[in-house]
Amino acid sequence: MEVIIEHQREETDMAWDRLLTVKEAARYVPCSPKTIRRAYLVGQLGVERFGHGCGRVRIRRKALEAWLRNGGKTRAITQVGGRHVNHEEL
Image (cartoon, rainbow, N blue to C red; front, side, top):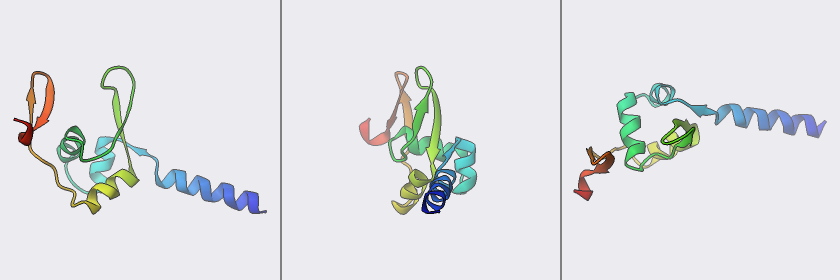
């Protein structure tokens, strides 16, 4: 019986912390997808990447909540030589 309950708890935890797309993350927060992208491009929001090169970005709810606990702020970014940098690096 305990094994079944533990398995159900693990499934609930996994469903709660499933990977979200940028659009899903923006709806969850709520904010614009641009805000989510800006936050992960400057390293303020942890993401997971899948695929070759930059790959597809997925965001865990735990990462979103940690970002919100830290104020949910983003810094302005600029693209310099194909690389995103925040204004403090310029």
